[in-house]
Image (cartoon, rainbow, N blue to C red; front, side):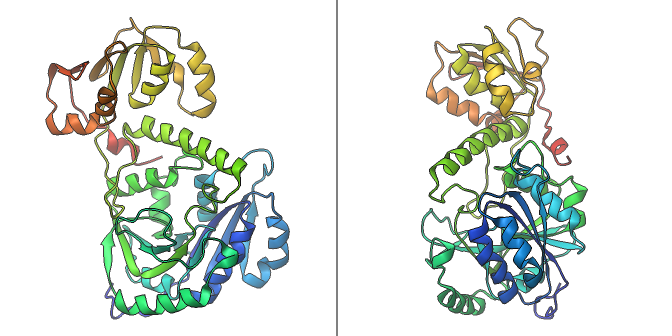
Length: 394
């Protein structure tokens, strides 16, 4: 689309999961109604948990605010998770284009229009976050303090700041992605939406990897602006210790699931463009204790363990949708992985562990068939087939 000619916007749907996020929804939803260029966008809220009166508030205010909301049918028993909640909203959307939006965000003036100017099939367009200076900035966002809680949001000062940036950043784009992001519903659903193995954390990084591998263009629009309270809605920084501990556990579990799936940790450029290393068929042959088994199991397709893994499996299986009995094999089993790494705990160092975490990049850069030493480990490469593209579709 020609940026200078585009001055209209189609109706889109804002999709907002809520996990007891009433204090944030009370600011996020009005910001969409007040600052969106088009005032009649659809807004869908999915209530995944309600410990703060969210449903009661929506019952009273949804009609006035033009919000459609859905409630987790297992409310109070189990969570959908943010990925499944987003997909539920997206499937319910009547518009061709959806915008993924966090409950702890406030929309800036014309952010919808200025993202829409860049959207087309095969493109994902994200807004630029303005955040209080609580976390490092690699240049992918703007640090300015307009409050760290919704009740203290300095709306007038934020609006004035946005007016200034709209002139300074008009038409500016970079390559990268972070919420909030806009996409054609068809493009998202064609690759299966969010992966259910990543319930409440890392689900976005997984999806962004798949966008990248599927050839979608990832665009950050610098005159599409939101204020972001930096993880308040998720529970990572909201001051509630119990909720924070639950978030930490979810993040730990989801990170291990991400590593099991991709063979690496989350990687991206400073501007938030996903970096997707190759996915290889790696087997680890381990002489070590259960603590070593716990540390190394996610980093391979199969682990051959010299010991009894039943205690680890019983502890870890509730945290993963992968079948650990299929991933963990007896030490003497036939080994048919394309790459094998022999690890002996008695000589294994922290430097070895760091190399193992970067193994896919090391193999890509300098690997070749054969058997050789890598630190204290012995690696045998039979084949170097790459499987990351098999992970695009759910």
